[in-house]
Image 1 (spheres, rainbow, N blue to C red):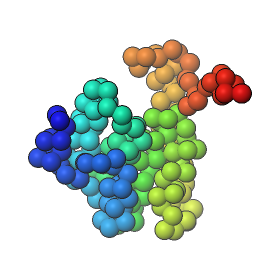
Image 2 (image 1 turned 180 degrees about the horizontal axis):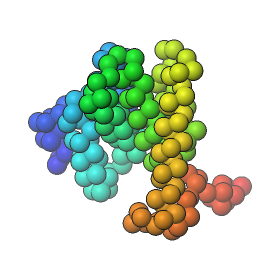
Image 3 (image 1 turned 90 degrees about the vertical axis):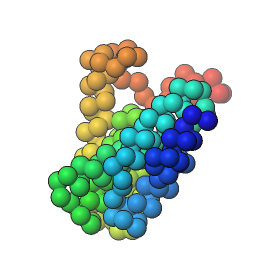
Length: 165
């Protein structure tokens, strides 16, 4: 009830999971997104998650990563194909850092890019995913995040899988 008026009043593009909006932005507008979309999405996602609603991490972080990278591409003066590559690299980096999964982040971005698979489009996506995942691990090792143990944790735990047997 708190986030709905914010989304409807300030940025209808930030409603829903975020992934379809990002795909539409890439397919129809070469990755161009409104400046306020990632900010509104981040704010409303924090309220929703903090309030105990069942929302996933992948949709909001995809839209936030794509939105901020869209703004960076716009500030640098990129358009068309180059802007699309930067936006996809940004969303791949966001997924990789959030889930501690650089390969998963890269594959997610490549999946969105499936219109064409050209090496000069795939390389920046992979580099962005690896870089963001490495920075996330360094932040965790240096205990700079609030819940850091000093050891990067994998996205899943083997003990939980063993318990299923």
